[in-house]
Length: 348
Ligand SMILES: Nc1ncnc2c1ncn2[C@@H]1O[C@H](COP(=O)(O)OP(=O)(O)OP(=O)(O)O)[C@@H](O)[C@H]1O
Image 1: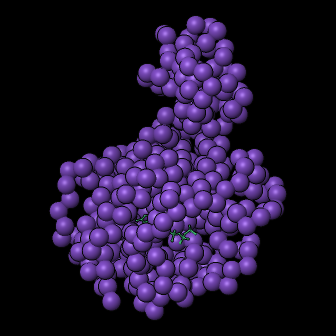
Image 2 (image 1 turned 120 degrees about the vertical axis):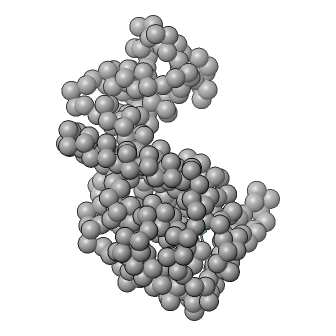
Image 3 (image 1 turned 30 degrees about the horizontal axis):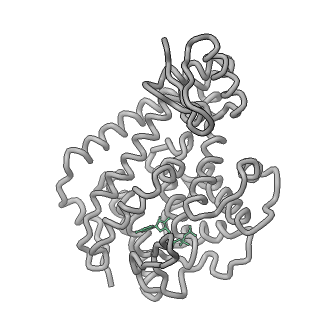
């Protein structure tokens, strides 16, 4: 049985990359607090958009999809799920909402994790919802020719409840005693959670929901405004590669967790940077044209309509297209390419 001792991690020496990332995240978190005081209402606009993006991206990583319009309607609770994928999406939305609104009242314990998993399956009939796995599961890859390869064998079902309980206790102990840096221990916890793979189904999505919960509880709120899940989904191969790399030796307790810590901290820092970029684009008084104009000023070299959409998520795609057309006509931007390859660059 794998033993978990999070105090031991303290003995590890962290390289300058990790220390630099931690320092930069604290700096950005401090700046974010100031921004939030300046424009609390306008920044609220980013929350709904991030929720939609998180729900869409975290489900898409697992191949669970619906149309953009349906995702928006489901997240805004303006419709009911029509099929299995939409039921899964609605469940993710419910857990995410719960975390957004009640993170301070959701302790990190096995019991609460099981309850969150139950809510994830609230819209469908899953007898294993809220229960740890009853069969051995495998993390596997399916290749284009159809063959399936096992990448990692998680913990056995009978060892799972104790292990899940153990990582929660270890996490709470080192965080409660302020023994460990939360930005180090959160990736460690998430990685252990993924290696245990405690459920028959829903492990990937639960791991990303728990990342959000743990970060909020430690005072890192960037995921509320910028979707971390969308950042992960944007480069899914890197996410899988890093996970594959750090799993080696996990059962024996000899894994090297450093690449996953760097990966997750990189995602968090990049979300803080996006938040800063979007901060001055959320002024309510700005027209769509001015918002897009400001967004283009943040770009160096060639960029696409999609790049601008990411910076101005509150604008519809047709408003962005209209504004880009006007900026091209005004000689501010140059448009190149055709169809899917259209891109722009600034002339001034
Ligand atoms: N080496 C790895 N390669 C790919 N994914 C990994 C790896 N190690 C851990 N994972 C995690 O496992 C998740 C997928 O696990 P699995 O296919 O068992 O899904 P699941 O338990 O059905 O979860 P969900 O229902 O959310 O898809 C990924 O999202 C990722 O977080």
